[in-house]
Length: 198
Image 1: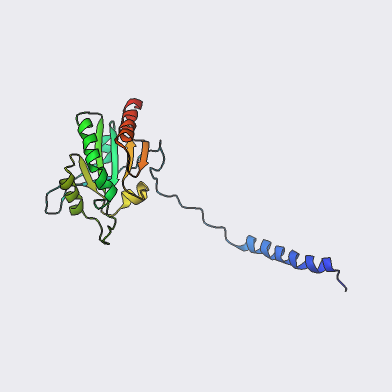
Image 2 (image 1 turned 90 degrees about the horizontal axis):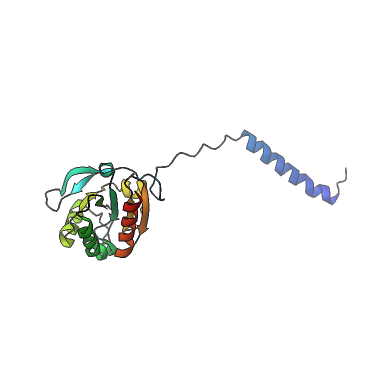
């Protein structure tokens, strides 16, 4: 049997399509995607709760007691994620202390910093002792907690650089968030907006 040129081109294409159809039918279907951890990456979502040990400026292990984010429900929470070795965190520390001084007598506002365990420039993970040293150096007057596993920072809040700030509304929802160094006016306006909105 003599095949035309068009038939010679069409037959391999038909065979390839047929093989692909058969392969698709017999292949097991791909597993359904697994749910991922809830993160606080967008405004309006409920801020993931956490319970972490409080950093004390004093030894021997620089950790004392625990605090849960949910214990501040009904208040606006200024939540900072930081690393003690982070130059941007160090640069902002005096300004944040000034902000804290302005709000410390306001019963509707709480400042809370989460110190993480990321490796510093020397390749060594940041420790609770490093966080305690940061508190002592900069005279920070509010509460710091230590996320030894990095789970709260990395997984639950999706933090990928420091400092990162979340303004948590009285309802427990994320009101706004900021990454990197910010001006005092920007952060103060965000806190005040959250106070007035709730």
